[in-house]
Image (cartoon, rainbow, N blue to C red; front, side, top):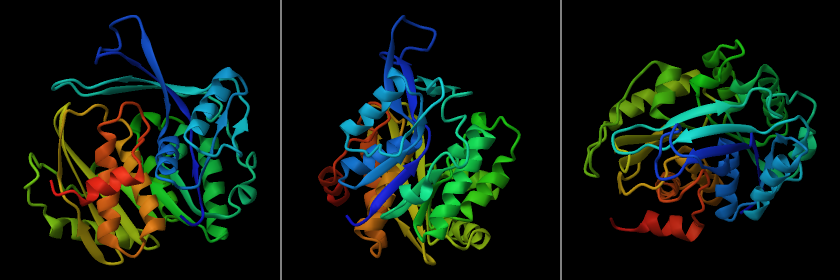
Length: 340
């Protein structure tokens, strides 16, 4: 791979109960580290990419342990900023049967929540970088973290770095008074490649194209997606590649998953994975983003392989517990090429 990848976001501590218990059941919580942009960083490092993760964590055992966990997976933490009093966290209730999962955030006044512009030396951080990955989550946490994100986007744009963006709309995080759609729209103006799921694209465009596949032989309405992408590209014309991931949850352990890519005026569809015996769906979208970024460096001009690789990476994440996708390039390539 050529060039460093930089990702930016809040590193979180995830708490969940064992054996699909509800949050009010049992006495013991399992702890895992995660957070969308950290998940992308770990997935990319596992795929063999040179990746640097930028965040702010408290200068205490919790913050240092979080960074140690990232370094276990060969993620660079040279530009992590230490300060503040607490690490952000979230409580995750796993889905089971026909019961959906549940997320409760505890991020107010975290070290990242209090991150302000000019705290980070972005020109130094972006030295030798080829791709910068950000997401809408950092625009939602606090006004200060949103301003710091725009500072990073401005600098990356000025330095000619390719900008990858995950819309990552999380309604429960937008509490400081900003208009989510307006803020996300401004962020999209910087993006060269974009990932989102169907619900997030629907939120930004007001247009719905449902994914109702119950098996791998479902026929996709490609013309509808072509119209959808052409509409969104007219609104944000800088972006060269738009990737949408779609999941139909038949039950907590049985999902179908596919993706569609718009690239320079053409639309590409990948296969539909019929996934049984799911272990953990948390971080599947981040695995999509990581697969997309890896493909941008590895085979940027082969759009069918591009989308097939990103989808295979996301499909494999369903088999791995925790937030991180620990699938190797060999494993992703083998699934991508397999005749299912």
